[in-house]
Image 1 (cartoon, rainbow, N blue to C red):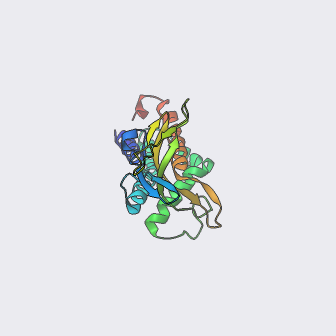
Image 2 (image 1 turned 30 degrees about the vertical axis):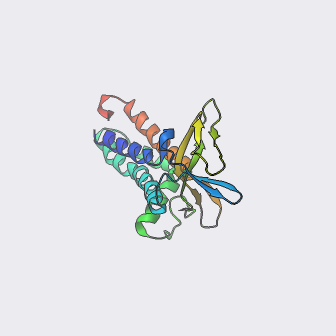
Image 3 (image 1 turned 90 degrees about the vertical axis):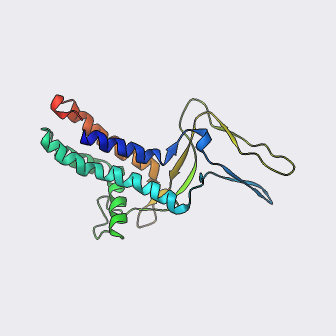
Length: 201
């Protein structure tokens, strides 16, 4: 039950950074001398966007800490988590981002990833969700105003940002890294559950 509640909190935190509800995309259309500017911050300030992103980072990063004692109590091997950590750059980067934010700086050892990652330029934008139909955006431009855009097909509003290492090399996109890190941990949990009823969450 404790792990199930922890997973529900993770999904809730990720849900604050991702929505496919077009009515919640929060488009802001601003006329410009050269045309129009469309942003999708959803009314969120920059600190609010960063906070939402980091809450998701914290929850995914600390799931490992909750899974280890749970594994010991349910006859599973906590070493599986260490193996997962070594095999997944995404998981190591997410843990490093959480540690960096918690401790207020770079770790001496450059973190678990060895790359001292940092999150930059957190924004909220529209992204294709990989469905069968390409996203379509429609804007109606009149003589004196521009209507809010209408969307069709598979798209989502996502809070994310690029993650760079200490050398300025891009590691990846935060949303992609979070998704992959959580997938790795869920795979470990699935293997444990397959061992029998005692490992049920």
